Length: 121
Image 1 (tube, rainbow, N blue to C red):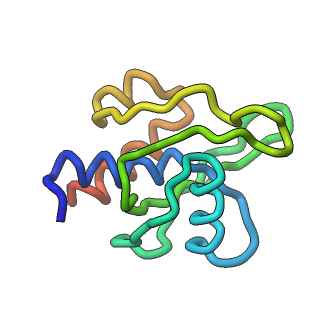
Image 2: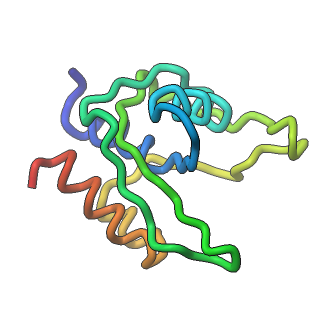
């Protein structure tokens, strides 16, 4: 197993991958994570537990977040065939404290859920 900081960073990656889907969490997230980050290997130490956001935006979208451990730290932002450009402009590995300062308030509950699950507190 990786050292604690690497473990938390890898787990948080999957928290950042949002997916509303039909089917199993693992199959959908692996495909979504691969398409958006180039990471194909995910482990599921927390099973299929998830946290949903409150409805947001004009269309009252609900985002669902899962925790998984990425098999690689190497992230790339490939071009989306549908968009003709990468879906995201940047990524970065951050601590929980850094994420708390960067994320919008609507994601505070998701971050706290992830922190509690990963640290056991």
